[in-house]
Image (cartoon, rainbow, N blue to C red; front, side, top):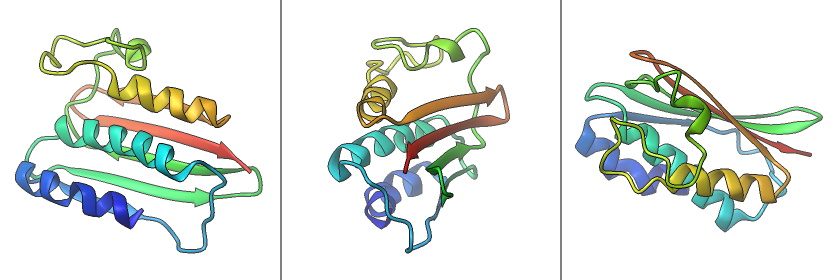
Length: 137
């Protein structure tokens, strides 16, 4: 996870967004490291892009007997309820995302699903978005 933080420190600094990562060193995930890094990076990039100055993006990793959980959340603009069911669709762009190509979250979902993981998102306009990635043990 420290690689992820290093990769986004400059982007977060330029946007004046705080990036916090909480991942115990004892956590080991059985996954494809490079592809999982790509998926998580796409989600974090999306969160930073949609968070205003003085906002924050937090990544928390935990593990239980069943799965490893990654929670990636921001206190940004949030996603309109009518757009939320579509954010993982390839080439989908909401009206406030005109500069996007619409493949980052779709690719993240595919990477996670191909490793038998699960990704979900919940959001509230004006309060932020929370992604939950789960890899089963």
